[in-house]
Amino acid sequence: MNIYLLRHGIAAEKGKDYPEDFFRPLVPEGVKETRAVAQGMKRLRIKPDRVLSSPLVRARETAAIVAKVLGVSEKLECSDLLAPGSLFSGLVQDLRSREVIENILLVGHEPFLGCLIGYWTTGRNEAFAPLKKSGLCKLEIESVRNGRCAELKWLMTPRQLQLIARNP
Image (cartoon, rainbow, N blue to C red; front, side, top):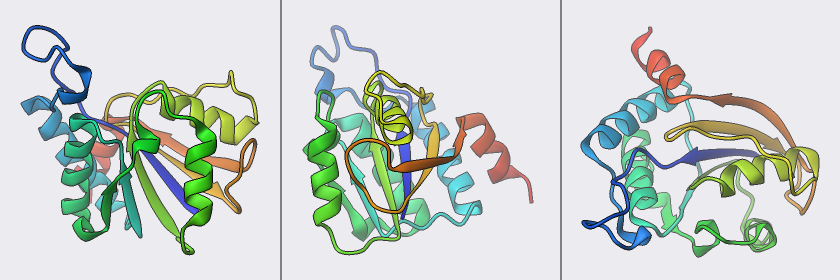
């Protein structure tokens, strides 16, 4: 199974306009960058069988943009298991309970995604592989479980994905 982890795009700052973190949307620059990243994903022929997104607005918007560009909007669903503060064990249980999926895209937040990459590649809770906003990681997993179960195939910045999108 290939698991792609995508951090949400650039979002509005928490403050007077958005006092609650949950409702912070992507800013125009974040929308533009996310579209470019999605084009890079398309050039890499990434076609998820399922797209799971954190329920927070900025992650849902990111997931919707990417799913549309990749032609998989009907495969998009929200999951509280990708919200900040979630436990890895809940996500593992959910992924194990699903039908066989070859490619899945998880859209969420830092530090959760970076910690998940570290946890699945080393088995250690304190391991961390940070993702920039709109950054993408590919893990290869034979069987999803708690602890070390994945091989890191690559981790790309938004800039790298944008260059892939532009180059023939």
